[in-house]
Image (cartoon, rainbow, N blue to C red):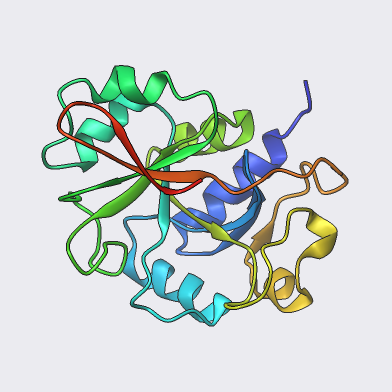
Length: 190
């Protein structure tokens, strides 16, 4: 097992101070912050040079955590999410407790329960959800590997995770879905 304890400690410190981190996820490299801190979220938008009307993905550590942050999830949401065999972001109506700049214009929120050991450990240690948005300038290609990340993104982050910087395994972004009343998936991005 790779020791990423120093990265976790440094990330938690940066996140608790309203900072932005650059970190690997189970999909692509991402920019993150405390998802409950509106000013930190603004810093992510500014670093990416992304329009503030575009919502961002939230990472949670466990499927049961969805219930805390969504107004009326499907009654079987925990088992639905736990059955996903690939990284999947779900768009839910009625996000709870998030600042307005995290929610879609309609009040929706995009949440992925992470399967990545580093991300799970980070979220559990922080005890808060984190933002996960691709680590690229708006309009530029999504960096699949650390070496693909624009220098402006690297220097703009308050903490850059060392874990997996030399990893050459390319991973696609998550699929994005909505869950219908019957528990079926409406695929928005595959």
